[in-house]
Each structure stands twice: as structure tokens, then as C-alpha cells.
Length: 322
Image (cartoon, rainbow, N blue to C red; front, side, top):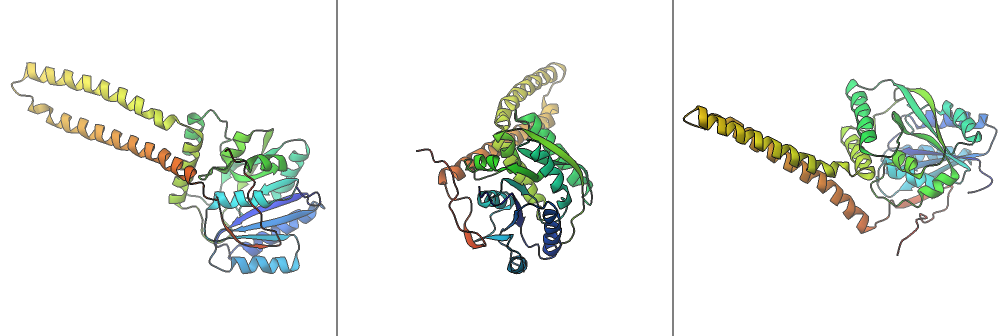
């Protein structure tokens, strides 16, 4: 931690040319109002528009602006991780560039941090500008995650939060490749609290979390913090045994009451489809876990930085086990 910097604001960006000017202006206005030192760390996750040039333009006039540019797109959660790795402040705030999460909430987070909380996360009371499908599936995911794991991960929250530098130091010791940052923050522990807000519509541009990426993030969250999906095999096996007994009873009844058991053909096909579907589902779940084990054993770096603007390149501080 650099004692000269009070706050580090980490902003992952990916093709945010349409909104980045407004994001910078609002962040600067809010942080200037604190009358304390700060840095704005933009993490460029492989943007292919003019986002990088715009941020460098800010930096030419504002020493608080820092830029980390990845060699390619490594993903939102990795970009957040890199920002925390490079942050020098006593407190680190993670916020997306799309302005759905209001920078004006940061002073309230800071006030809670000064009360002694190590993590202050923003809890959404409303989600404006989002489809019913996205709202419903997000709500469903948080409930499933809560049931599937013993870890208390706050519901209806995103990555918009303030972290004490000590929490960030502990996060550096967690080298998982398929990261679910908000879950890792809960796992680390420390005293945590929430501030509530209404989430706005995206200011401009397109969402960087389409359905495919949302599913990937959901799988990362479930497989990183719960082994219960694997236990579904036991429940599926018990269900099939029970179904098989019922099927035998039906066949016996048909044999006694009719001259042919052909009437049970549809039932046979239904049972076959059910069995096949359950087996393939369980193989897919096991495959997800095996794939994550494979990612960990390769031990590749989480990200590669091609350029640092206003920052020095450094290695990720991960405790190795030999």
C-alpha cells in the first residue's frame, strides 16, 4: 500500500468508447469532493475501439489516471483482479464503466469504511432498463447459490463494492483461474456491510454481459463454492431406482390384467429418455469440475499486461505451495 494514496478506484473497461468520457468526469467529480488523495485505475480488457486513446488523453491532463492494458481479452473478473493487484490505496473501490452503478454512492461507502467495515458492497433494490428474463434469472441464480453453498454470499449484489487494502492483500493469495470475485470476497471474510441503491440503465453502448457470459459467470460461482451439484448423482440414482420399481409394478399389473405388455411401450421409452437425460446431465456437471481442475493444474498466469500507463509492471503476489 502506498501511504500517499487514500483511495484506488478500479474500473474494468472493454469497448467503452461511448461512455468513458462521462464515466471519468463523474468519477473525478465525486473523488475530488472527498478532498483526499486517490487514483483512477482503468483496466483495458482488450478493447478494440478508441477506449485506450481516450483514457490516455485523460491521463495527459490528470496524474490520478492510470491504465493497465491486457494483451487480449481475459474477462471482466480477471480485469477486476488485475486492478486490485495494482491498487495502492488504503481502500479500493471496484465499479463498472457503464454507469449503471452510480459513482455518487462512493462517499457513502467510504463513510461505512471509516466506521470500521472492511468490505462495503452495494445492494440493488431496483434494476432499471433490464429485461424481465435477466432480472428473473439473476434472482434465481442468487437463490440457487445461497442454497448450494454454506458461504453467505449477499444476494442482489454485483462487483460494485469497497474493499479495505487488507482484504485485497488476502485476495492476492487466491490464484483460482475461473474467478467469481464477489464470492471470493465473501470467502475471505472480515466485517462486511451493505449500502442500498437503485441501479440505473446503461448510460450508452452495449452490455458486456450477454447470456453466454452470464451463464459462464453463474457456473463459475456454483462450481467455485459448492460441490453439491456433484451430489446430484446420488439423488438421480435414488430417483431412478424408485422409478424402476414403479415400472416393474406397472409391467406386472399389465401382465396380469392383459394378454400383452405392449401397452407399456410408451412408458419404456419415457424411462429410457429420462435415464439418458439424467446420465448426460451428470456427465456434463462432472465435466465442468474436471475442466476447472485442468485449468488449475496448467498454472498459467491470470492475465498478461502489454502496457502500463502511469504504473509500474509487477508480478501478481500469489503464495505458492511447493
